[in-house]
Length: 249
Length: 221
Length: 62
Image 1: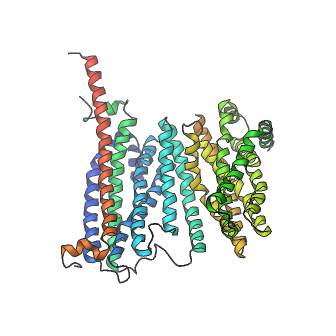
Image 2: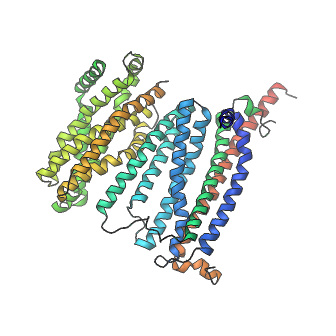
Image 3: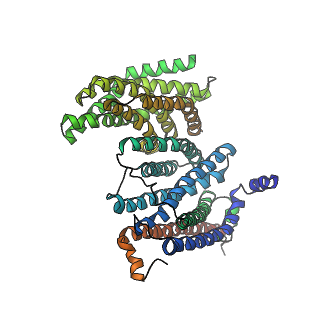
């Protein structure tokens, strides 16, 4: 356990993390491809047709992973943000900055697939169900973070301000979810809910889990790619960037 | 404590000397609530139904109008830096600023709401609950808004950016606040909504000044 | 195996628009995002290389 802690601090500087991230990226793409292939195969060729929802329910195999990832990425961002504030580390801020667009994309996909699932099932493109509504607000929280960072010129100030915003947000997400759920149960007559998935056959559960893993590996791969670009942008005047093989003339 | 009261007194004095800013937010509240019947139609039953939501959303927007004022003026003339350097804890001074913001922006909304509620044909019980809910809710809005105001201090695109940051965080207050009035109108128990609102207020009263102070220090670096 | 023919697979029991609308947009998004990030990387590398070359020529104008 001690070794792990010491090793981590050694990699806390952008110059050490850059090459490591570069080496890790292909592996995460590979994992994403493997999980994705397995997940899609289960989703389309093994999981049976649902008695009530027909083939339409298969959207669940990307809707649920996208939702999970959007929430998970936000929590991870908050973790990096907290670490960055506590340790005053540049890399943590860069990681949070790198994760945000991917998280926002996941939230958007969750909303899009939710709408496409809702239309055939409940007749409307949008339902004010607790999950979807909370997801919409989470999407706004992502956009707010990205907008705030874009508006602040000084990168260190942008890091820290963004960190506070994410930490305030992460505390609020359960509050928002609870309040929206309350609002939803008060106002909904019928039980229109995305959580009413067909009773999970094992294959369906496995399909969802595999796709979730695929999305997770994908998110890590893209975030690492993006953080490398961010490092190059923010550290452009440092010696280690100038010495990089891809930069040296 | 003295420092906090001094800040409150000073801010109130400044606000009184320049009443237009205060009154503009209040008139915004009035105008926005008047727009809804004009857009939707004068039927009393419908208006009664939408009244809690409309009044609360208008209160949210009116509060947001005045948020940037919390720190911008003091930041511009250097007072904020003096506050950061003073021996009194910055969190206390910030709490003072939030209280004075509420007194100037939030309290007038609470007092104005019943009059606007009558426009929407709300009965006395609903009006009472509306006032109580706003009394609990508007300080909550000032507290959460302060964090946003501090984060966007001196940042370009400040006002709109502030709205984007703060409105998602306002959603629980909106839900419980409007929900309380709707519960009253439906004859259901109001206690749950109001207690939750009070709980959120207590939480925010504890955490928001602290988060705002951290954000201010970052802005002042 | 659920499908008796490719036609059935693409029809998705009548839900084709919704299922492929969802999977399609997801696939598009998950392909577009890494492409854009790569684009970002190319842009910054190009700028850095140009700077490095300029510095080198400054020091050693041969």
